[in-house]
Image (cartoon, rainbow, N blue to C red; front, side):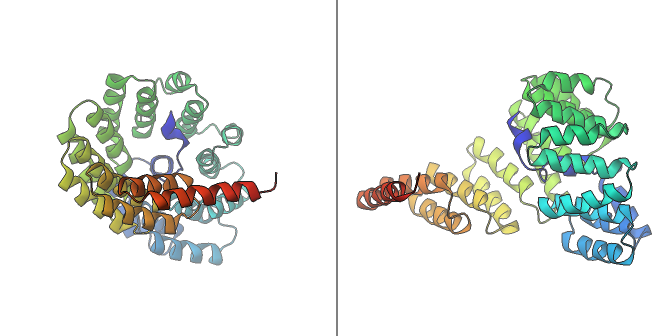
Length: 329
């Protein structure tokens, strides 16, 4: 269940915070609720982060006791990967509306995003809302009890429930069962998250062309978000379509030019293609964004060695040894 250790931006928040209707629902909500907290939520769901926060900032300033405004602002922060402000806003929402389930569900999502499984479980115990079962199943998966999570969602009847059950089944190695569930999820809730999960299952099943269609559709639904473009790049690379892989890798980086993980991934593409100069340049850029990342340092030294600059490698190793000796125990 490695995927359940990732942050909430890529799957949890996009899934749990999206009731039936997908993009169409939120476009309608935006048209009918301009100036309200719901409009801010709609903007966040449509990937319009800055506009969403501008609307939600005004909403909480106008009425500091509006629990929904605090919750949707917290959700907007969470969708953008800003976990600390998300927790603060969701804590405030839960204080203002102790019996309202969504503040607690989203707070549980935030806790799960940072690996606080116990905290997420305690939060979910305070609500019996149907949506809480989906998060509870994810909690069980992160605890290493994916089979129990599947049992929790035995009677899946919504897109999110089918999607999470698919994720758990795939983690258990049940590829046919996971693919069947994600197909049902796509019928009920063809959100970008669901399409990306289906793309993954289809690619693993050998249907890479269909997987690419889902990745492209997810990219349309999430303009400015790198993940679906990265997924398309990875699928192309797996099939040895290297020019196409690099094209989509560049599209992902255009969405987030200083993302160290994306820069490192592109550098690995270049390394596997024997483009050592481009690989080194990419790792240099990645290290500017994440200067303390030991894995990136190691990969850069590997590239330098492949380019025959052994003196630089030895000097770097000596510097590292000196730093370790000078570090107090």
